[in-house]
Length: 513
Image (spheres, rainbow, N blue to C red):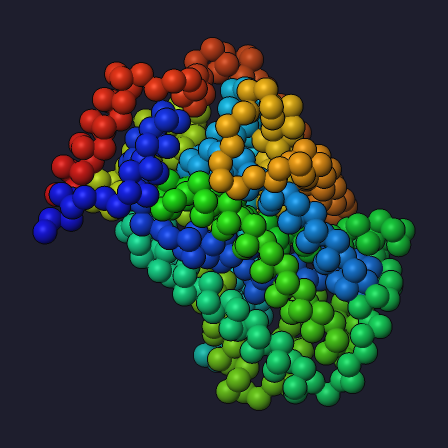
């Protein structure tokens, strides 16, 4: 039987009907199940990426206390943010995610600003992840396996590497959500397996006697050799250490951005958001605590920078160590793949409503693969460009955390005022009486984590924020964007609009045959 003429399952009809109700056609291929939606966020969060590459942001702040006490505190904030977002995602499961939520709940101006902030954060995420895949994973761990000395690799080697892997991630995305979701599914399983292998190997082969008091000991390492932070008070050092969590436990909006490619999106998307954060915080906590417990000397580890990881891996026998390193390199690559998926879907959705320059091109769908081809490649190119900046990882990691958490707070804040008024119809995932308390806590938590990200030496992020806001306001008011930008379709779906949506879907299906 021709797959194009087979009757879709009932849940597929419900998904399309809900999407039509929000004013959009089913242009993307809806092939992701519950686990795939979870895996795309779980792979993007990727504790084996951010939890390692940004580990020194925590350790070099308040020492072991930043890990043992800071991780649970920051994770609690992240989980509350995720729950608040999940409730909104259940009501409005569209590819635009935060942009649509802000527009519907807070108006088109609020939605337009949210979209730009979220998009910039996502571009920074792709760049930061792939930069982290370069160093320490490829440059420090993989290259020496082939006789290449890390010190011999310079800026051009870095740029070529980042260009190749980012373009390959774009290519896989371009080929369709099926292949991308299969790879992220595999990565989802591997993150669990490799984390367990890594922790067990570190503990089993470590020559250091385990001392759990390390995890609650405050040591102010700010201003010392190897620390990322200038001299600060102990309290501010502890807050600065939260950037480890802010950068690691982020990107879970990927589940929302792939809503239009997920079956039973109103149920599976919120589950994907919350479960990806929950499992990441639990497994991540065990992992980062293990790092602290096996270090011969915490002060020496701070001075080693990202080299701390190579040092704690050293006691593990070569066959186990090499296997773990290669698997982590693959997992980090897939983390970047998931980030490109999320960024391109956000760009497509925003362009679909005319919110970006060259929107007609950026919203085009490749009929053969049912993917937003142009948006995918533009996302990849932008990510490559921002890695050309010399002090890339520090600024990119801080910038991605700041911009994403601000964008997370914006629709949540709008929902506080819209709930019970313009927002009366909720999806299957509901917080009930905890809805507004969670939303208020989520906004405060997101703003605290964003504040952490702009502390010195990451004050350059402030300049980016100020410049971005200035440019956005100039465009909105000075260039008249507010008059041209209509925002997402709002209101009852007319028969004419329904016919147009069905015609667009039929045209894509016929082109694919």
